[in-house]
Length: 95
Image (cartoon, rainbow, N blue to C red):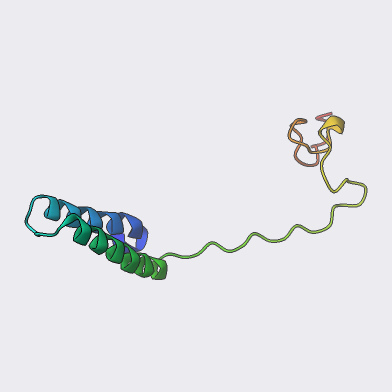
């Protein structure tokens, strides 16, 4: 079912179709009424969408640094900083 995979796509399509129907005059609403309907519909659909999607959990907290390693990587020493290109222990023989 596409609702479980793409709830925001469905939400946008519903609001888009409603706006299209109103712009062709098939649903006679003033611009102020259409704005109110859009706001209310977006709010309701957001609540429904929130029930369908799975929230992403918080990332785990980082533990203390390894003994002998600085808490903040130092790029000038090649100790894991982004400038060194080294992001962990080196494999044997790779110097």
